[in-house]
Image (cartoon, rainbow, N blue to C red; front, side):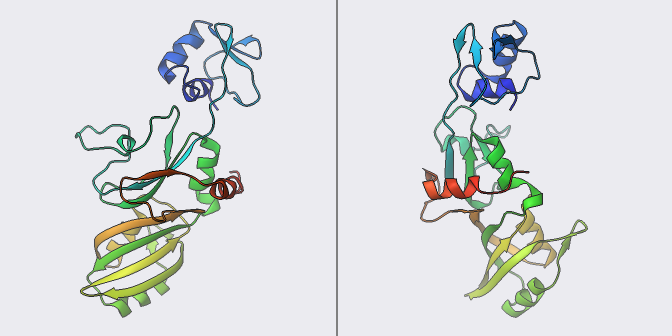
Length: 234
């Protein structure tokens, strides 16, 4: 990873301040004065600031049940609440993929950029599960449409599995997609002429939402971490 990111993740300084320290010649990597653009392996390389060694921070993984109305960003120009207000402040923590402001459900955070890339990289078609409550067409119509190839922006939506259940005046659709294009479920529903009432992401790769209530977070389990690390490297 970039040196300034490694320094920020270790809690030494912000990325901007880390760049200033590099330009001032205060940072060394394996005894050599570092330069802007340097890449490091925090677990192997010896990084020092003013002669003091920087210890790599422990890797963090969190699962959050994102509530409706929260923006997936560190700040919002419109003053809306952000997901970072709901989780602990951890240096170098980034979100894995996005959910739009009106979508709730599982959102992952980590300080491990390489593993995050495994979950997001289109090449590896990591599965995501969703539950969406819709109106506008009958249960039978929706089921038939989902059996067909649905193309959005010139590319078929990678639907692995679907289940359609009537819920009073609405229809509940369970979808498993092996892709993560932004707002893909909402765009899929729009293509089918469906109005979305509620959309929840239930899983991302090997991690499931489980019993988390909206606004609650948890650390990933040992088994989940092992499953994430077992995913292919891009």
